[in-house]
Length: 392
View: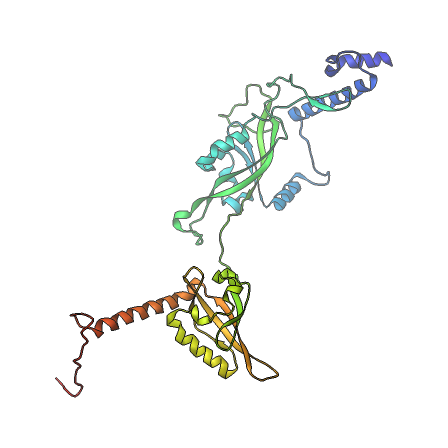
């Protein structure tokens, strides 16, 4: 038994690098790991793994993959960028037929700014294989003295990238303008690098196999259309709750209660407004209208909606409000106890007509002033008026 263990240790390279005598269990572990490494290397170079159930054919598996991925399958030669295979489902995404793309260069259909990035994805800079070493404790660690030229590619290295590919639009497609028949679609490609023997893939007369004559390195991936962030008009507009606050006023218009939300609108604290009159904050052009609404709400005993009016805030500027007033009657005395006002801030587009009306009023006042006085100055009134009885 010991002779077999010693002979096995002499055949396993990792056992030779160990200083001192290695126990039997470690020799067996190293031997098993070395056999797995040899088996994996042979499979990468010469054979093909079939990771599919036995009851599925290749065509059925391809159909299931493309249906689940909602994309197209393609195989690209990593050396030259030649498209070796593409599934028929590419027509649904790029509007090219299978025959139009097979045998062509992938770089001819990429956006010019994406070519260098795709070449990096097809390169083998970060895919050199590593042989693993088993320590005496059973742990795995990479071995650093592996020659970089042992493998050009490591099959099974995952690739995932975005690229822009040409999308062929037919002339009868009315959804796109004539200047946008051929545009670029963003494709999300996910797949793996794979090695095949050069005899597996048919080569043209101009395409000779590599000098080592061993493997043809390819990218096998599935391309899916990346959804574009296109702003679509909303069928149901978003309703934003208006900014409003509630206040209560005495019969004479003084504030007796102010909602805390008024601070965000008027910049006044509620206690700063209590006891003051509403008319102190109104714009002079709105006092007449609000006084009429004040009179109506005390007499009609029903809700009164005011027009837009301007209210002075703490910094001296004015804000446009619209209010709904109703009087609260004391059930015992049957008299009006207070006026409840729900004040809503008018948005900009709603107050444009109000501002336009104010501008017209100001212009009208200027015209009336200019016609009221003659050209000699504002102190000399116009005393001559046309006699309506006279006719030309």
